[in-house]
Image 1 (tube, one colour):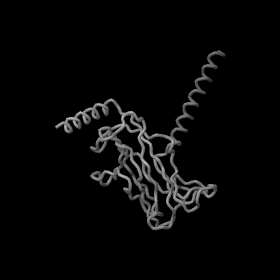
Image 2: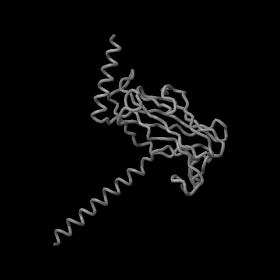
Image 3: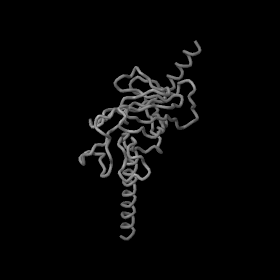
Image 4: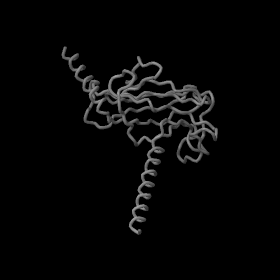
Length: 213
């Protein structure tokens, strides 16, 4: 009887540990770049500087081809405004929202070869050169602006051995009400499914054939 209870208690502890691990993982990497002016008790953070709350230490996994774009794509991330509403899922007491009417955009400063972003409303426009901008939204509108990240192993100069591929960007307010954010680095990693691998292999073979011809 004692052994049975011990096994049950061990099983319960293991289950609880797994649940806690999953909960931590889920909360550690939100599906959005949460935009505000930071916390009112942020210490050294400039009180008028735009800020993104996101787990920048974790590389985002690219799984499969999407939307007919080359390589692997991901559309799970978006730029989300934190508003001063306790009912907002991202609201935290003490977070300072951006001012109404601000015009927020992302400015990309660097891309690794093979890394691009796309606007879901215009897939014909590939953004992968320093200086390109991405329109996000207007302060006070509770915006939630999707962005598509793309990783193309067939792109010229792609470093297949890197393991993690990155791009740098910051956000700015073109209306001039807020200061630019710091520069953030978005990291991508590639864990394609077997089906995606075969599609990528086919795309790579096709690209090599086109180049040789």
